[in-house]
View 1 (spheres, rainbow, N blue to C red):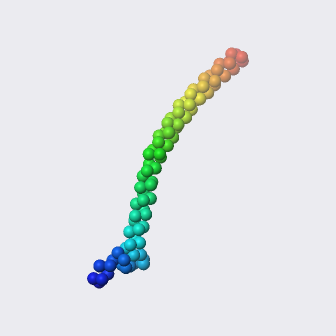
View 2: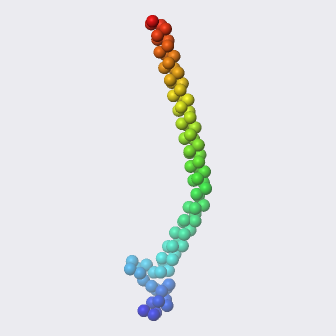
View 3: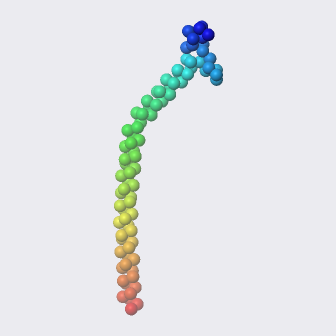
Length: 85
């Protein structure tokens, strides 16, 4: 037991056959992956802001289109009434 504790970083075997050294390497690898992902966060935030801006512009455009459509329908009704009455 003492030998295992002293040499745990070289020879300790865990339940799944992983050594502590391998687990440390995996942990370090995950840390590096997380750091790389964190570097991309500003890019994704900028993209999200652009998407929201575009969605707002599309919403405003749709409102203008709806208003024009309503005006055209009103004109159509007025023309129909003036022609047939």
